[in-house]
Structures are given as structure tokens and as C-alpha cells.
Image (cartoon, rainbow, N blue to C red; front, side, top):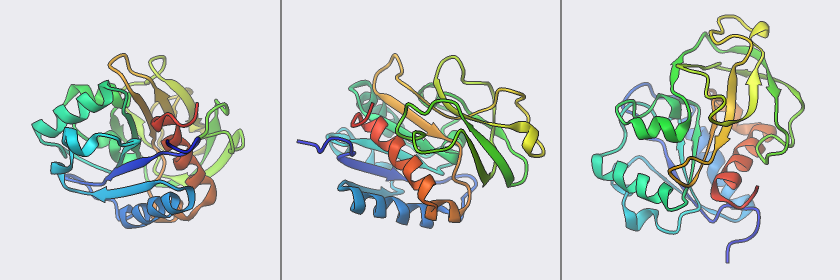
Length: 226
């Protein structure tokens, strides 16, 4: 039986065919440490052949972390779609929103697609929903340094927005007064989906609050936390 409150097994996918973040090694190490500390297995891969019905069976969550471009084969897309439709939990971090532009279902699963960003800089995350394990530990105004993503459309109201960013506090924002950054949803097609736009820089993955943010998102996606 899975232990209450923790994912049972996470497939961590970091393949890139576009821009590659140099924070991926630090992020991968942080996820392995979270798994060790909280009692769940993490399998990291960049091999699209990992997406089969057999490989996905029994996973607690699949995490696309700073992926970019087209990263799945047609067979892998079909396997991921079947797995989420059967209740599998999906989580995306940062440039997961810059991924699989040619697959409409992925955009529906994630909730919104990347449009652009200004240079990384300090800003303020506005925590809108603290009744979620990814944000319950955060202050309502969280000072953070990141690459503040704009999206092609505002995902609200199709998602449960957990946090936005205050565009008045940094240069170059393009979405206006309502700028979601972190959200989750339970798509009509099945499963659970969590996304955070945060996590550009390597040092983010050493930050205890950000690690708790990732852990909470994984727990929710895996269905081990409400």
C-alpha cells in the first residue's frame, strides 16, 4: 500500500530538443534527494522509449522538468494519454510549457503554453490558494528570483490557480494584472495535472521552500494529497 502523503514512484523526464536549461542536473539531483527523504522512487530519463504502457503502469506521477520541443514519439504520446486517462498524475515544471507544441492534447493537459519572458529578475509571487500542498507553506507574498513566463492565454478559469506574479514588481511582464504562474487541474480526459512556471535557475533547487513546492505538487498529482 502506498504511504499516505507521498508519491509512490515518479518518472522524471528532462529531454530537450529546443533550449536546454543548465539547471537540469541540479533539478534532477534535488528530485532524487526528495525521493530519498520522503520515501518514493525517482527514475530520471531522457529516453522517449520510457513511455510505454508497461513502463508507466504503477507510477505515482510523471514529471516533465524543463523539457523543451518535441520530446515524445507518437507511440509515447499515446501511452501517456492512456495512462493519464486511467488516472495517472502529471506534473510540469518551468519549460514543460515549451514542450510538445505539435500535440494539442499536451496543451490541454498542461493548461497553457509558453509565449515568452523577460530577463530573469526579482519579483513577487502572490499566493492565491494556500489550501494546496504546493503552496500551503508559502507566505501570501513570496519574494523570488526567476524567469517570469508569459503564456499564450490565461489558463483561468479552466484551472485552479494557486499563485500569480505581481507584474508591477518586475520589468517586461506581458499578461497584465492577472498573471497565473502555478496551477492544477483535473482534466475531463482523466488524471491530475500540476504545473509551476518557477524553477529556471539551478540555485532554486537548493531552496527549501521551493523544494516543498515541488514535493507538494507531486503529492497532489499522484493523488496522495488533496
